[in-house]
Image (cartoon, rainbow, N blue to C red; front, side):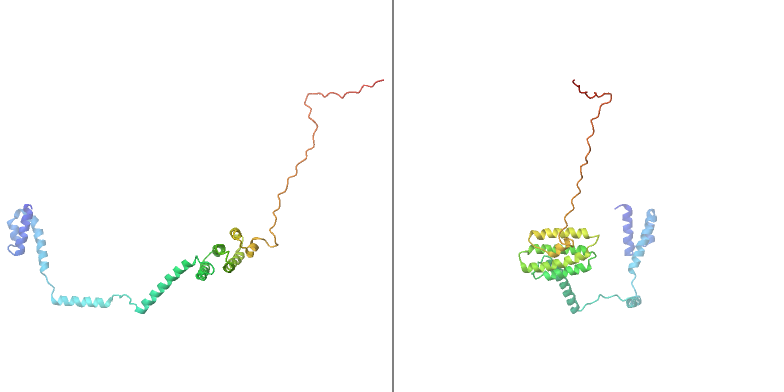
Length: 253
């Protein structure tokens, strides 16, 4: 601690204890009076502020004003829900979670299984809200073909899967137009190959792929180009060569 800090510390202690006043401290240290004055004055103001205590009247008036402000600006309380309402919300959340989980498990169900009806119901809901019905029907047709190939050896379950596939085929047949005809036909041709590989025949599928009139049209063979017959020309005689005259036969007497 240097000399100025020591002087300042001593003056603060003396002023705090009442042993010296501000002017007395400055008079004892005239060489530092310019620096000590603002510091000691600030210390005095702080000390006087600590000594100030609120009167009972001020406290009462402040309490009344605070209470009036609270009445004019009530604090919004958090909404309290009854126990019955909380139980209802919990059950609804549980049912929603069960529905989502069950729908996910149902997507792998096959005809004849307990979750297959749930699977079909979720598909109908999906198609109802989808903007592109053709894309959904193509995806559903792929699912039905996958089911048919998985249960091709079970006649009862195969009949149920065929009914579902025929329903999708009926919709796809009515949805064919110039914009999506190629994608529908290509997808159905792939289906026919897969079903034929497991020995499943779908007449409705054949009717869509084969034009009306029966058999598949035989492609028209490309026209054959006829060879051009060029008549033979006499040999060309080189320029400047005079042909020999034909020999004249000699007449004997």
